[in-house]
Length: 128
Image 1 (spheres, rainbow, N blue to C red):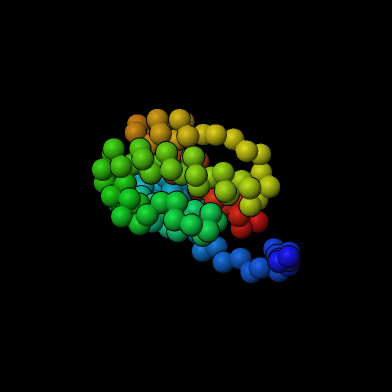
Image 2: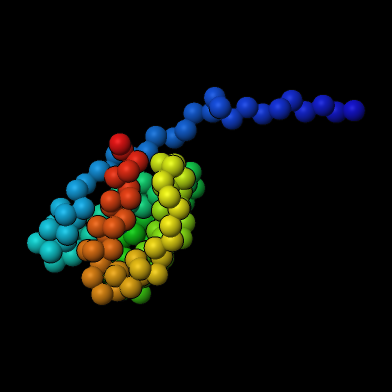
């Protein structure tokens, strides 16, 4: 009879989450001032946070870069953020689980800076 010792999960170190706390209003202002170029940087940093929180690759870096300048990929970015990234953030912070995927996709198509503001406000909850 082969006895397997129980595994302990309480003492397993978690990977650090990259610090990316920005006021959501600044995301809007920087996005407008740079004609959306700031959103390329914002997408990459948000993807890094989602990947660290989920402890796997939720959003690849090329998707994050191209999402800043190509609308179909932008919709896919916000779909992944709403379906796979934000639930892990809510789980980590103990927040209420909500599904804003459709809202983020619609806003990401019409006005991506507002969708980024919503996601940033949820990301900021990690650093309180």
